[in-house]
Structures are given as C-alpha cells and as structure tokens.
Length: 333
Image (cartoon, rainbow, N blue to C red; front, side, top):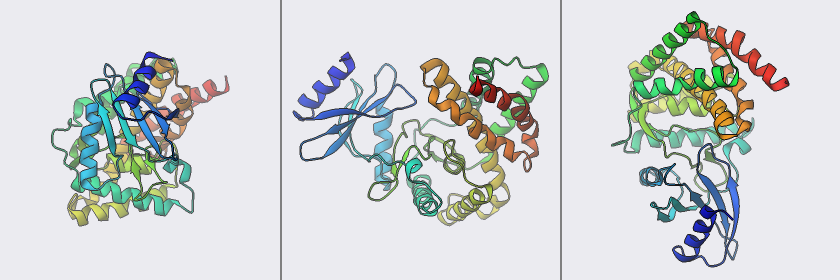
C-alpha cells in the first residue's frame, strides 16, 4: 500500500468517522488527482478525492464547488475536507457519464439539461476573483499543439512558413476569444465531466480550473466534444438555441447574433488545438496513451470548419496534409 493510500484510509477512519468501508478506484483523471469510491455498510457510497497538495490545489475545487451549488448547479456535496493533505470526501454522482448515456434518442434531452445548467453557470455563478482567460493563457494553451503533438509525438520539423502560419492563426483565434462577452467558464464542460444518473442532472465535476472568459468556450466544449461527435447541422441547431437562451437571460444581446457562430467556430478551433496537444502530452509525459485515439476526431472539427471559416483554411490544410496522415501511420505502426 502506498503512503498516500495509507494516509487516505487513516483520514477516512479517524477524521471522517468511517471505521468500516471498502475502497475501490473510481475513475482515471487527466491530472495527478485520483478518485476512489467508498462502499459503506448499508449500501451507501461516497467519493474520495486524493490530490497531492504539491501537485494539485484542492482549495480551488472547494471554492468552485460552493459557487456552483449556491447557483443551483448539481456539483457534489463536500462532506469532509483536509486541504493541507489534499483530501476531500464527496457526494457520489454515480457511474454513468453523459458519454455513456448519449445516443440518438437521448441526445436532445441530455443536451437540453446540460445547456440549462450551463446557462445557470453563465448567468448566476459569481466569477469574481477567478483567473482571467487572457491572451497569454490562450496562446500558452495553443502552444501545446506544436510542442507536444507536432514535435514530440509526430516528430515534425516545421518550415518557417508553417511556423508563421501557426503563429498568425493562434493570434487570430486569441483575438476572436477576447472579443466575446466574458462569463464563468468551467473549462472542461464535456461528456466525461457530466453525470447522467443523478437527480437534477447533470451532475457536474472537474471544474477546479474554472476561469473568467469567453462566453462560447464551454458551449463548444459540450457540442463539439473531443469524445463524441454529432452532425454539423445538429450542433448548429443546439448552438443557436443556446444563443436565444443567452439573449433571454441577458448574457448576450441581439446585436451579438451576427458574430455568435464565428465566435463559436473559432473558439472551438482554439480548444481543439489545445486538447490535441494535451492528449499528446498525456501520452508522452504521463504514460496515458488512451487519449491518442481522440486526436483525429478533435482535429477533424477544424478541417470541417475550413469551408465556412476562411481564417482556418491554411490551418485545416496543414492538419489534413501533414498531421492526420502522421497520426494514421503512428496508429498502424
């Protein structure tokens, strides 16, 4: 048994008053956090988060949890906490994520719930004191794409023209993000972080990296998900429905209509460049290779957008000609 697990079990018994329990791994996380499901006598369950304080900040998770719950979003109840040791005892939101539950029959209902919860977050959650999703952070995120996917994973040597193209696209995408009205941003609002099998769905998790930033960021994370894909026409329909909700709630105004879909598309490109880089970093730095299979779907969104966003045409061509074939050859090797 590791020192962290011994610490965790001792904390559950002594500080949380749980002398009798069974502990099993609950989920894999794309960070240094670990989650365990606790089975209690009588059939009750809890989740314990183990977040080594030298690597993760439990305080941010607690802060955002309280903000979400005050607004009526179904974030997990915190039953006990030890921030110094990086331990939290949480409500168990179940095992069925949106990714597990989504299909053609359930999609409208599940996305309807998720969009309603997103509207609550954007209209009602206090963003005060959250980090700004500023130009520096937007560009830093996109830099993961050449650093980890192009160079580290694919071994590509970029020409000067290719590097200049990426730099120009990155700045344009940052500009488009910074044009938008700003709101509370969950930052990972997608099918793996929304739980379907709860009362008052969705259960919302993995929000500790929330920031104050562009209004379309969480929307595109949800509708152009790295883990599940829907037809473009359906995504556009859901997005325009959300725009109407934003206008009704005061988050956006009627005059934003002409720019909304462009914001949505370009925000998606920023996120998908970032995500592709993160997936490669998870494989090479952390030994988590399972995310590599999601990169073609993630970058495919950018290729698809080239026909309606001229500013993405050169990037899409580069991905189609230089990146996707390399990913394919890596997979078949």
